[in-house]
Amino acid sequence: MDDAPNSEHFTLTPIGYVVSDYPDKFGIPRQPGLAPAANARLVLTAPYNDPLAVRGLEAFSHLWLSFIFHQSPERWSPLVRPPRLGGNRKIGVFASRSTHRPNRLGLSLVKIAGIDTQHGVTLQLQGCDLVSGTPVVDIKPYLPWAESHPHAQAGFAPHAPTLMDVVFHPQALETLTKRQDSATLYALIEQVLGQDPRPAYKQKETHSERLYGVRLRDVDVKFRPYPNNEATTLEVMAVEPYAE
Image 1 (cartoon, rainbow, N blue to C red):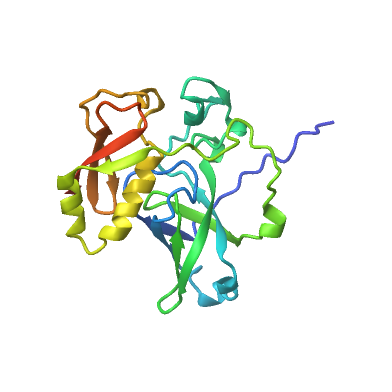
Image 2 (image 1 turned 120 degrees about the vertical axis):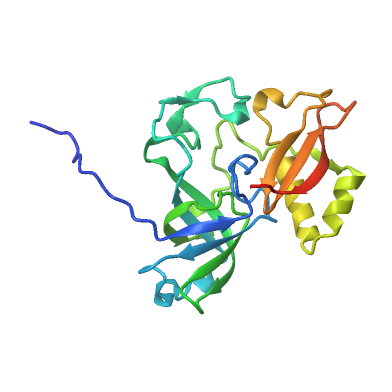
């Protein structure tokens, strides 16, 4: 007798896509909510952009997004190297939140900042951790009484990551202050770089002239380890218009 489960294949159809402050996946915080200044829009597409489909959603503050890691390779491995463990130790993919997983499905908790139903449906989001263009396959309201367990065990990531200090070179700061969105972009840069987006094996550098770059909104942010420091501070050297 064959006790194998049904091997039927399922097809997922995106209900919309994300437009976010992250044009590229490099630098995106590895969990939602770590950069509250990150704004995004979820644009629902036909036939799912009927305002009736989101009736009542305004009563909720947060939302689960089910999405596809569309920029990750389709191949997967049973073992992955989480950056939280320094990028060296391997654990099982199902014991991680790695993007390199079967079916490339992701789950993200975001704050609802507004709902626009004037022309279709667009949801304004905060704290999003998704690259622009991410296809979303479902949304569900967050229920804190059912889904928040403060005494749950969190394995190899029991606490939020330790943040780096971020300082701005005077020239970078001068460029930034000339923008209309200078306050929110400053906060976004500080929050993203505070997570230290560099590869794990580079995060102990203290004396390096190498510039790293992360694209946020429409700018390239150039940064480096702060000289003569104990690997706890990053310095923003330039904020430049992004060149396609």
